[in-house]
Length: 228
Length: 294
Image (cartoon, rainbow over all chains, first blue to last red; front, side):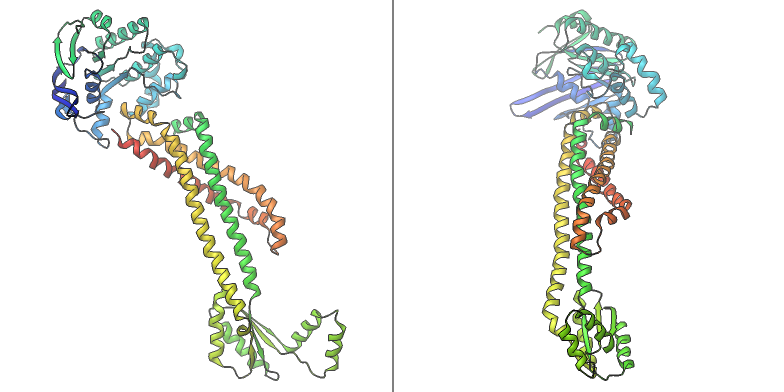
């Protein structure tokens, strides 16, 4: 379970990204985080990935405190291996092929070559990219790059997938396909946290919707709609 | 290892730039080694030409002179003592003035050999002549006529000072140039890693350990060091071949090309060590900054 306990992020007296956010996300849930730009969605996700630390409050992932883990701390590596992250700008290694972009994450987690050569083709098949296995990231389209990013986030079988505006750079057809993939991943038992301001996607999903405004949670509905 | 090799092959521009700068550094290191050899040979030749000549009074029994030679050889500062008898001195004098009939005829006119026997003393270091001459003064040998160190003292002192100056100046210059070159090489590698900072950030986001992130950069640094040292060796060979005959004219008996051939493995070992250490150290320091960030 993910637990944000009264979390705030204050940069200065006049500038704060989060204010007293408390929320719980249960295992295997699909949660949409919605809100306008600057509402605090990305800050929330960065905090869950321990990229930023809160000014006040605590964050837990299955009882393990995420707050305050430093770069030298082994817990940081542990947390990031348990969460698969997907970003709007894909964050792929341009000089690596689709296969290598996925394989290096397994390699980094100490998986054997046998496991890598068994799992990577399967995951590429799952995201529909088998024909592009040996294409460099720079040779792929936006939709294809995002699918590689999803495959990379998924390959180590994380408990949680966080996706920060994964369709922000994609056309509607590719967007629908990417969201379809996330639904499929969720149905297989992975918790999905999707930050987006795409109304069509949120309304079509019909999942839990947490609405944020000016750093605060203003609405949290079980089967919600995009209302701003 | 695999990632490092792939990155080495694929980042061709950055790899080429880093290798070029590192090759320049290593060529400088190789050049300094050459310079050291040349100056050492010149100084050794020069030092070899300096000696103290002790002139012996005529009629001194040879066993006394040989005993003095034996005493001198016990001194730690003395490299060699050469005894030149009156007859040897005369033969040498005649050989030197072979074409001068006037001098040779004048010699024939004399009934006795006018030349003195002498002991030529060579020191291990040019700065040690002072100690040897002090020893001779303290011993106060009655059969010693004169010691030419005191006559040549100014020249010997000057040569000793020049010798020391060239040595310490050479070392200082070498250290100075090496430091500048290493700073340039270090910054080139830093720029190369800076361009890969996004890659480091992505690796950290997916939970890669610090050693996993460092690994490819270290392998790249090692490969750059190996390739650079091989290129440097290939660059130094024609330089040595070009300079060798020219230096041979200036310094008798010195063959730079032969020195290069005789010491090629030693040179490669030094270049390889410097290249690999430089590559690894620069990579480790440069990447440390990005690893510190969360």
